Image: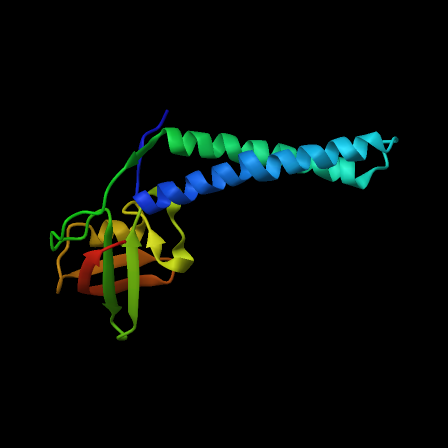
Amino acid sequence: MKKHLISPQGFAKLKSEWEELKYRERPQMLQQVQDAAAEGDRSENAAYTYGRMRIREIDQRLRQLDRLLDGAIIQDSPKETGEVIFGSKVTVKDSAGKEFVYAFVGTAEIDPLKGLISLQSPIGKALQNKKVGDKATVNTPGGQRILTITDITTYE
């Protein structure tokens, strides 16, 4: 089992999803499949076919969540260290003056559209252990970007 860091918020979110699938959605789908099967000919029964497919998807996601939850090492938010580390929320400006905010979380909870990234990402690697005022060069598909750290807080 692969161990990985996760924030308390990320762990709670994954656990909530697991419980929703296990105790609400899967039993509902099982009931729908049983009801559809009772109607007779299964070969042309769309509700039966869809239900079985959805149960397989749910079971696959439950197995994935089991692995993520079992291997999770919950890392509480760090004390203010003044450096970019796991659990930091960092505000940066690029050379055009555009501001971005990133929170450094575990790989199981990343969501780049919400600014949740890991320290293993290119931006994370470039910013790790840097302090306010430091500059970091990030290699992106669009070329190099220079980011200046303007604030570091704790991700909550």
